[in-house]
Image (cartoon, rainbow, N blue to C red; front, side):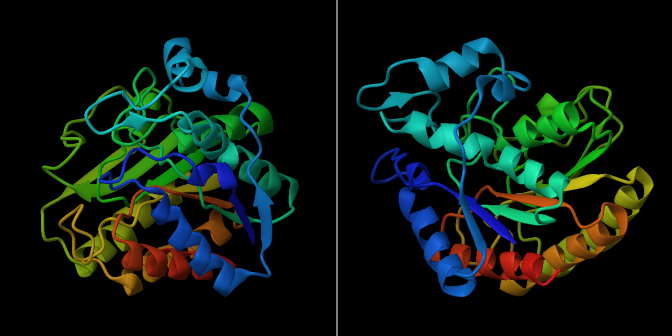
Length: 304
């Protein structure tokens, strides 16, 4: 099991009242080092601009990674840059790329990327929703461009819809996106299809959804779609803000639900794609349930 992270991912600080704060990653790393200190820990390398430009246009790349920032700069009402944000984004965006290389070379079949800021809201031309670069999309396109992968599956169980991932792959049938999320809720989309990719399958769920309903979607719809698609690698947008104790959403998931979901994904990956899984941290803002949920998620990956 490989765990990717980097000290720079702790430097992005959007302000003392912002929920996407460095403490999120601090508690995740503390939990993982306590439980998996003997794992293969690696530093996320610095991103190559070519990797970013496969999914983002030049204007966004410049705005996020090349423009000088002094003080705080608002990209939207929720997405704030500070002088250190560039360094954080450079590492977070490419952790999945390194994980893909490791999985495809046979070094290890599964990897978890303990990085921030998150990524799944970032669109081709727009940073938003705490996200600067879409790390999952960058990793998926690297798998296609550099390893000849023809079918990539992205599974997103964050309480917020991964609108950026959908927008990037809306017309790319090489990529399947299975996304379950609270709706209506930020980013207030996902209920109506966009683009022409039949492999994007969104499942909007009402406020108050509990683990039993989510498990039903995963066990029935996700399993069927994955078996039909036959992915060669599976990515996970691992957001834990659907936890009952996290007030950033209104789902009722508990630690055991995240363990169960991950175990099912691992089982399918073993059958469909030789166990190749790249999981990237997305949301989760209440520190205790975040650290516990990541711990059971990674343990399920380790037990594969």
